[in-house]
Amino acid sequence: MNGEDRFAGALFSTLRGIFRLALGRLDAFREFGNTPAAFSASIAPLIAFPMVGAALLAARGHWIYAAGLMLSRLCGVLIQPVIIERASQWLGRRDRWLITATALNWSIWVVFVLIPLGMVVNDILLALGAGQVGALTLSGGLIALYMLWLQGFVLRAGLQTSWWKALGLLFVVNLSTAALYAVPYVFHPGLLSLTLRPASG
Image (cartoon, rainbow, N blue to C red; front, side):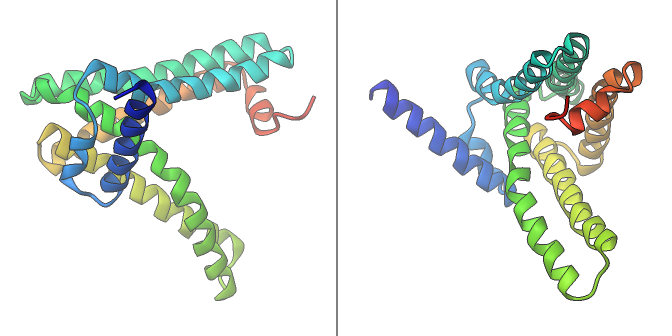
């Protein structure tokens, strides 16, 4: 099998795994490798996106903001597998941390399918007479709840633990990630307006 065939096979397996994760199927984990290489492939896009965003910000002359944003995003991405690795030791599932972290990294991309679906739900609610704020709150809330359930499922099934422990771990992961993401905005309040309006001067 040549390189292109291997890449196509790995891509198809990953997409199939993401789809099965979205359905809450345990066999989804078989589509992801329990290896450092598989983990690296799953985290690479999550690192690339903040680097691109920071580069665009730096190109507009905001070097300090760009550096702070990139470092916080990198720390936020990397803290997740660190917490999972420590939790796997505590749970006696040390051999499962790589596959769990890998699956959790890939599961994030499900949100890009949910956003268009949420827009459809939002339009339906508006057509039924719901207010704009109420429709957005409901559709956005449903997406958020589903993503929390999906992440909880990955942690529970990946580390083969109870729902209570998985939800506790999910809380720690999300709180730690959110805190790291918030750091640049605390020290540089003007960063928020720059990130919300990237095309402005």
